[in-house]
Length: 412
Image (cartoon, rainbow, N blue to C red; front, side):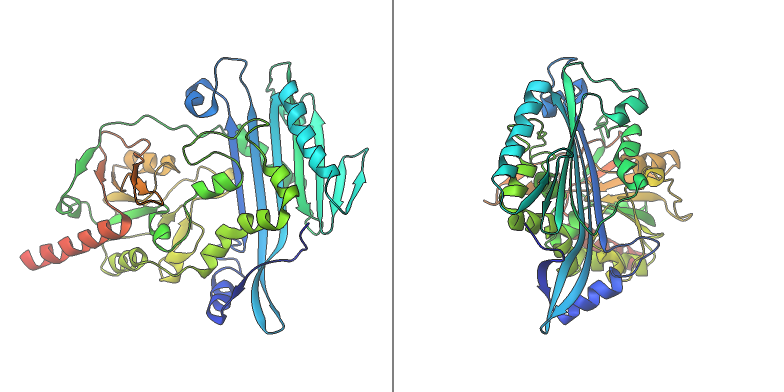
């Protein structure tokens, strides 16, 4: 198993300074040295293509909650980014025969793992600085509390892997279940937006407030969110859910190769710390300086790259239950909401913009390039009839708008 603190990567002096400036202390009320995520995957008729739902008795469910806390250290003159505390929670509900298979695979790996001290009665297993706990339920207490009923042939296993120095509160442990009450994200219904090729069409909707997805961050070599989906076995790149003993091997893989697994777990945060702002981030800064973008950036990203170029961010991606669907106070001068590189997340922000009378504009290539250079279509999930879509990468789209603004200024 791994030792805590777990050394993630070496850092340059510049990268240490970045961490201390933007991550070490709370920033705009958020502790940015802590990375947390919660995902829910359930079988329903509405997601049958992704979850393999075939009828009302298909109620398989998988809840993932992770939390990591990072710091920096200097060992023998070398700077390191290090994982200082870690927590992983899975709650898996399956038909009993499938759950038996799922649990047996984990227990077989536990028995084959060296240096564990096992409390058989409580199903607690100790590995160096990590502790693994399993608990099986015929009916999960949080389901009973919320009045949810799974089919009688279903049971649930809760699995926790955490560093021994992390002591979660009851409020923390209940967080995924409180969010679960708020409902599962739906894909929405796609309308018939206006597709444009001439960025001049967008000028009349300036100044704008912007919602930022992963487009500019990808240009800074930060992986898109789907890589975390694959790391934590939420869903694969095609959107298919990992549900069931043959697909969900997260805990087995962790026990089999913990060093490799925690390098994957910590990869996203590492990429954020060592990243440099992309051209898109500087284009965004210029648009703010010129007065064409107003208000805070409504950001789905946790890389702090807008903050690093001097633009204030309002982070939307939060696991705080009361802020999960935040009310947005749009800037009074904004004529539109320009959504840059955000395929599916936080559609309630766009809904609020429409209700306020703002034009919603999407700058998105509606696809991505595979390793072999092939472009794979990835349409926007739910733009509406009144929206505008400008099919472009963040960099090219913002660059073209800036060029048009220069032309407009000269013509005027």
